[in-house]
Each structure stands twice: as structure tokens, then as C-alpha cells.
Length: 238
Image (cartoon, rainbow, N blue to C red):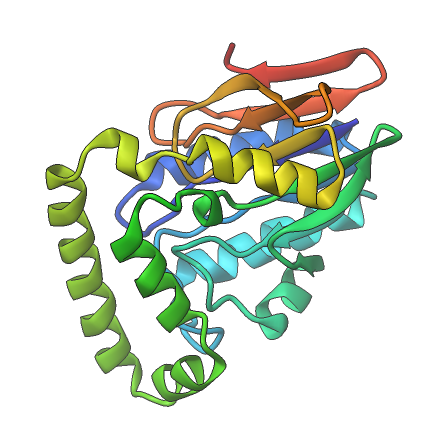
């Protein structure tokens, strides 16, 4: 069985979500062959040198899970895009590019965080291009931690204000972008998070095929997870 999660948004001031994650790692995750975390594991990630108690606990917990034989994979999200190789190594998880194709129960499956599909949100896409630039990242990571924290706090406040003003349709995926992406990679299944709108959708492709898009939910109020096994696909809670 393969398990998929995203958008936990772990933070020091959200112990309830950490408790959900701990229960998941103890009960559901050990039953999996592979665990895929498709971004936004953390509410914010300021660099691998930001040694917080939460980061230390997560690294220890994931390392312990890997020692139980579960292969761990991580894809950076829009909140933790600065998570690097050093921390991934501590967790014993493999970093995945966004997007990437993995074989899931014999089917080529496209994995994404999901923000690349929100092409109607022009302001966010411009911010994403800026912050994914290697020169920008090197400059940011060279700042003192206090300066990085100040920047992250301001960015979160700006994001909250923006989200409250923009239409929900703008922050959701663009259907044509979904269709083009599925056709570009030649797959019939896409799994992503980011939008916090858990559901299963069918997308008609130009050659008449139907492709499935599975959206993972966030962890603010539940333990959203996708299980893919020989018995089928289960998006929980349903």
C-alpha cells in the first residue's frame, strides 16, 4: 500500500495537528510500503539551519518510521520550498521534483504539490517564480534567522489578506492547465494537494480518455490521507 498526505502545516502553535501526525505515524503509516508527503508538511520552513524543537521531533519520528521499512518521499510545497537535502537526509526521505511521475500500483501517476496548476492566480505565480530562483534562495538563506523570520511573518500576513479578498475560483486549479499537464506527461492519474479541497475528479483528455485527478485535503480538522492498494483507492476521510 502507498499512502499520500499533504498540507499538514505543522507549527509550534498548532500542537493538535502535531498530535494527529504522531497518531498517523504510529498507526496508519507503518502499514504502508511507501509514504509520499506532497508539500506543506510545515507551515513555514526558513532553512535547514533553523533547529526548532518541532523540526527535531519530525525528523526523529520520520527516521523512526523509515527504520520500520517504510520508504519516505517528500515534495516541497509553497510553505516549505526551502527544505533542503540536509534535513531530508535526517528524516531518511527522498526529495522529489515537482512535478514527477511515479509508478503507483502499476500505474504511471503524476505527483504535484498543486500550486503550479493554479495559473489564474497571477500574483501568486509571480511570487512563486521569484522564490524558486536559486539566486533569490541563496540570498535569503544567507540572512540571519531573525531576518528570515520577520520576512516569513510578513509574507504570511500578506497572504492571509490576499486570500480574504480574492475569489475562490482564482486560488483553485485551472481546468485547462490540469488537462494540458496530464497530456504533457501522458498519464491517466494525478495526485496533488495545495488547494485544501479534497475530492476525486475526472478530466476528459483530447484523445477521448478520462484521467482522474485526486486532491488531498489539509490537516486542520482531520487526518486527510490517500491510500492506494491492490484493493483500490481510498481518500479518507471520505
